[in-house]
Length: 495
Image (cartoon, rainbow, N blue to C red):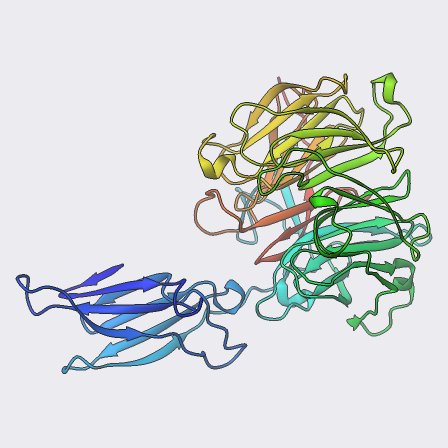
């Protein structure tokens, strides 16, 4: 709603067949009732894609002048329409306003975090190696980025960032982190949520809500011979044993891939674990299903998992192929060694559970760090919360601590390397947590990838932080901002 004099505007961003609209009301004086005077219908904007969505989600009004915001337009870059009223009350317009200068890449030299800022981004003890806005990785208006992974060429030692883009998988050579090179894209069915993993020098990736997307496979050794980048890469395989999937997990020790929250054609396993033998990367074979009773969106749905050949402290399961599955309402541990007969080991939850989203084991397998994606939004916590589990006895996982961050942003993906946990916490950006004392976690660095406004709960900002390059470069994707190459400082904590 917006008010100006004896005029009122009411926005309906979900109306008009989803494009949005605005109704104007007026009255002659305070004693008269309101009457409909005009409707501002969404129209195609000139230039770029012309895409208008959510028209009326933001409004401003003064007598004779109305501004209608459409923040979801042009891939969430946003548009504003300006209307003027003549003396007879007739409105004219719109005049379209677009964002100013688009984001500019930051490359060529490291930008140190000084006085809590680096190149305009809030930070602490994390330095910026490079920033590539969406356009710098080939994204067209309306695209965004989601998940990311990395690959190091075993022959050359070169490091590559593998980035999920709405239109496919973008590949960036990040060997020289201050001078990254966008090599090109592997096109795929459009998806707002991709997941990417690597096995045996092959990239595997999925798309959610992407129809007959399949499991796409690409031989990464082809990157040794890229001439005149950027180029469009053809995939080596699109396996049609699945349709769409929200997440992809690979047990690199066993050569097994798992898709979860799988939908559409092919195997879905009720949204649980779809097990795929990828020991021959270009000849995947369906291996089995596992579905359990948990779920919030629907029963049996697994949102994400970590799967590995177990080498942790519980001797009963050493050498077994296990999955630590985030099943929306429970953490489920499953033995999937026998794909024809997977066996549940345990399930556990905690007070105030909202949506068990994703987690990762400590390197020694003693602890599991878990994020709940909805607890900040539904109000069961007023700060970003990470749940710490003792999983030394896999038959009886126990919560031993909760870690609360400095704000209430929604947490998304986290990964562990050594005594550090690397979190992508949407609007709070990239966070570095010292986990050397699992019962007393402490933040030791951060870099806010959305340098505007506060850090509330919600689903914009940092999606994933990939910390496994030997160089120490951490690749962070931020949905509407692009790709950040960051270097956390190693600071020693003083008790």
